[in-house]
Amino acid sequence: MSGQVNSKKATERVRIAIFGGSGYGGAELLRILLFHSQAEVVLATANEHAGKRVGEVHRNLHGITELRFTSALATEELEKLDDVDCIFLALPHGQAMEIVPRLPTRVKVIDLSGDFRLHSVASYEQHYGRAHTAPEWSKEFVYGLTEINREHVREANRISNPGCFATATLLGLAPLVVNNLIAGRIVVDAKTGSSGSGAKAAANTHHPQRAQSFYAYKPFAHQHVPEIEQTLTRAGDWSSELIFMTHSLPVVRGIFASIYVEMKNAMKLEDVRKMFAEFYRESFFVRFVEGSPDVNWVKTTNFCDIGFAARGQQLVVFSALDNLVKGAAGQAVQNMNLMYGFEETTGLMFAGTNP
Image (cartoon, rainbow, N blue to C red; front, side, top):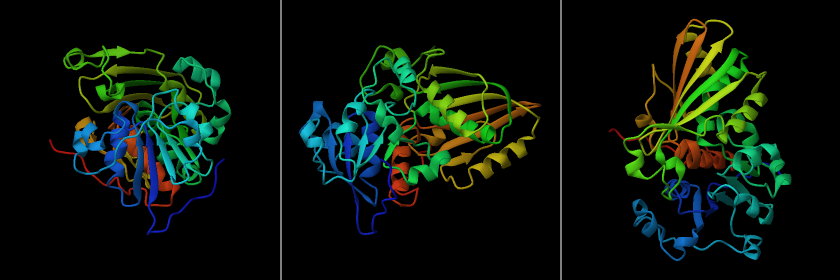
């Protein structure tokens, strides 16, 4: 049910609903959209906090808005969302597929979960561990990795926002795959901060457990692997093996990926940088650094910083981003901007902090 670009007049604001406003992704959506010049948040749901002001739940937003959280909407309420233009679904995996079929088709939807990222139902059920109840809707969703799918996003009515690991990995690999430069297997060593596990404490995310710890998890089984493989296959003539390993960092925010690639031919670093810079020439939020990036430089921003190291035919691409912003809410807003004909950077022009 994709449609034409829904450009809004300069005097009109997009009326926004956020489903799942109490989690980290929902909190970041609120932080960004409450200051967005073309958006107005009119509804935010959070069952456990229904009736509370947003600023009571997210203390960083205290005094900024009088908006109150509501409980989840019943089916008949979903079908009557006539005063909303765009819905962000910041819900746990498995919930978006129950809601999307009941939403008015004219409303634009951006889903931050994994429910509609994969075209294969069998792959979804294998990697997410649940049955997919709305597989027919997957074809209506455009994969929202903005920098490599920009034109399709502009015309979309439904967006499936990429995963955080997938965003960091794909931004580091897309120019190489599109230009058919990879000779052998790809090895991705990726690390994430604790906020990627969500707002509710668990044994492996509890601060005393994680603060002085470092470990791998989900070896060969992370749910972002089929998402990465699906996108690379569509980007170019890629059929290499992907080895993808994730690790837990003792930090709160950030994704850092070291991507090891064997090239068909040796390339000088300056030529690699030029090729990447040309590929991302229209992508403000992709920055290039000398050597290794640092998660501290991208924390709380919508930037992805990329650096390189090379020896002969061996190339390492380093990619760093904030898992909650460029890896989730920021990229979702970036996609919304394109869908409504706004400047891509609207509402996202904020730098990180130092220190």
